[in-house]
Length: 260
Image (cartoon, rainbow, N blue to C red):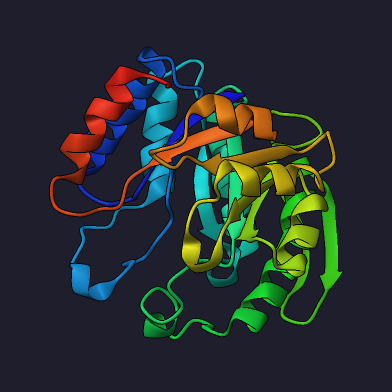
């Protein structure tokens, strides 16, 4: 099992870059950022672009995996996301991961900008976007006519990783549609109802349904030892934090302490 930190894309970008560098020095295997526009408006957070920050981390590290957990493809043009993540993959020497999902919260992060807030519609957009992102990451020509997009393009270069970089898909367990979506790709990032992390028993339930070739990426609960998640079948264990005042300084201690 590998270990990662996943940080809100909030605060000063230089501070996030510094934590990414520290994560590698402290022995973490992955450094991931959220991908929100404002998260919850009432929180009045300073939100920054995760891809710019990850590009800076890529240039200052050598080993740690980098990516988003997660990018909501429903509000992004898939070809633009493909360019961003391929650029990150090549900057990092083949260390990028693309985490995708529906995204939350629907009103403050989608409806407030005129983007689609309905979950069903966003799910259909996510599926169609993945049909485009896949060949874009592989450097293949695309001729696509779908429900939302018509694309005729051949983007170069491909990702450094072959045949393409990994795609992980987030979704609520035990809902069947997100799970079926995830197993079509390379990994599942499950959450419980209301976005809560799964306990070890829940992770074991998911692992029992997962193909052995796929990653199972779970967020740790503070009162559960890492060994319990490993026994349950997780391949990645992620530590995260909610962006309340002082969160970054407090979480820096977690990063410096290294994986549990």
